Amino acid sequence: MGVRMVRADAPEGRIDWFRLLDDLARAGVPVSSVAMHTRAPRSTILGWKQGAEPKHRDGELLLDLWIAKTGQSRHEAPRT
Image (tube, rainbow, N blue to C red; front, side):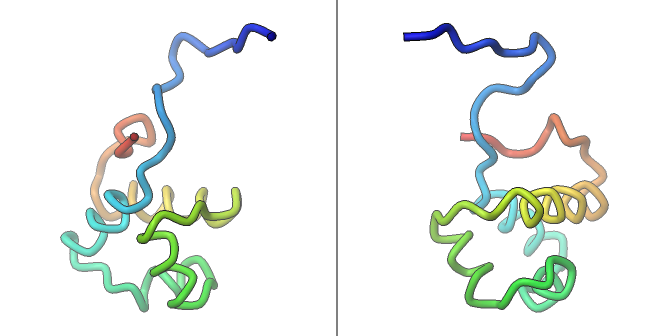
């Protein structure tokens, strides 16, 4: 078994997509706007909220939107 290297400045845990999407909703961003921003169907976004993992590109777009709407940094994103 190999040793997993973790950067000292890297946040621990995976992004909690449910909480991130919930933060966006509380910031007044409807699912339809998230769908437009990511170009993902509404049903896909609801799947992410229920525990599915977005593809890397979609996750990056979600994080960008979250940062823009919450004013928080990438390292403050909700994690599991």
